[in-house]
Length: 105
Image 1 (cartoon, rainbow, N blue to C red):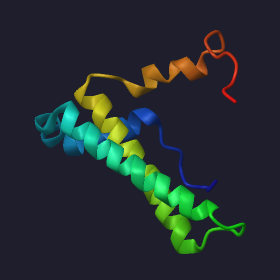
Image 2 (spheres, rainbow, N blue to C red):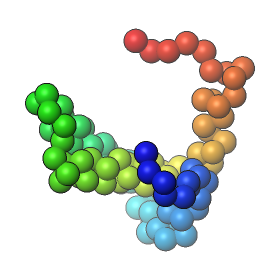
Image 3 (cartoon, rainbow, N blue to C red):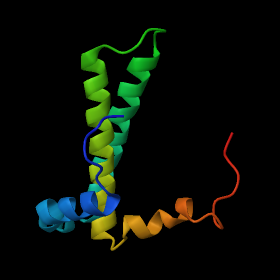
Image 4 (tube, helix red, strand yellow):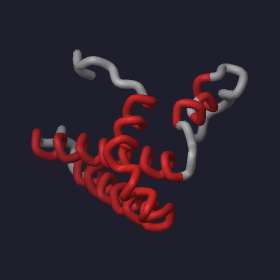
C-alpha cells in the first residue's frame, strides 16, 4: 500500500455520480452492466497475465492491473448510483461483526 491519502467508498461513489450520472442514467442498468462486465473481463485478463509465470509482474503489467481494478470500482459505483444503492450502506454486510460469518473456500 502507499502513503497516499485514504479515500472512502462514499467519496468515490459521489465523485462518479457528479461526473457521470446523467449519461450513465440515460444508458440505464442494462447497458451499464455490459460496460461493467467488460471491465471485469479486462481485470480478469490483467490478473491472468500477472499469474501466468512465477515472477512478479513488470511495472507496466502492474500499472495495467491497478488501472483495471479502478475501472471495475468506477463502473460498480455507476451501477449503484443509477440503481439508488449506497455502497457504504451495502458494505455494512462486511463491516458489522454480527453479520460477518465464515469464509468461502
